[in-house]
Length: 113
Length: 117
Image 1: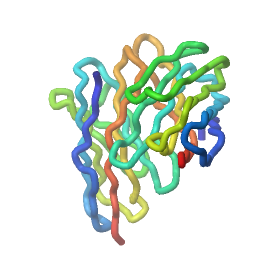
Image 2 (image 1 turned 120 degrees about the horizontal axis):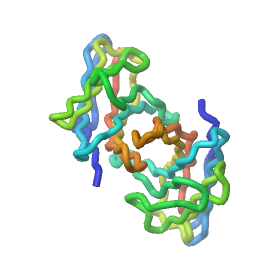
Image 3 (image 1 turned 45 degrees about the vertical axis):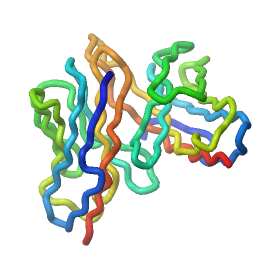
Image 4 (image 1 turned 90 degrees about the vertical axis):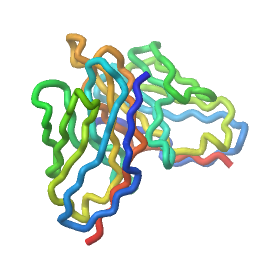
């Protein structure tokens, strides 16, 4: 079965620091990959997605992620975080032949001003 | 935002009572999902649907049942609520991209906060 691992459960950064959140998945076939963000008290919103093509994908609010197939990874990055990036971030994966969307346990990011 | 409405948004119920949560979409998407969100566990899939009357179990389906009699509505029922089912429940929808390439991204409802006392 598919599974998704997010190794950083809590991250604390100062504004302007760089961010990288790790995501690894277990499925060996062709996958679609996603990062979602959940601001306090809100529902999940899509940050970015990878279906195929260029493994470096850019999303909203300056976020990007790199798909490294050989490492089964899809890490999220942002060069300079802002206080408004304080939120919980979820990596998710689905394989192309099966419609279950599986989430990691999330990373709670706190950005101090 | 995608047209997804969850009702109720908040509910407190007693142990042993049945509870039904409703998810309604206006996007005509084929796939609908129910997740529960708990601290330290992320989002865990309860059940999902891939069409009218077509449903399947997720990873935490025990104690839950679902029904989908219309494309737009996906109901989640707790037959006899327990305190361990206190959680925030999210509905999501997605669509097939076609050609065996999987689904589009999922769009989420606002969530239902359920407390079982």
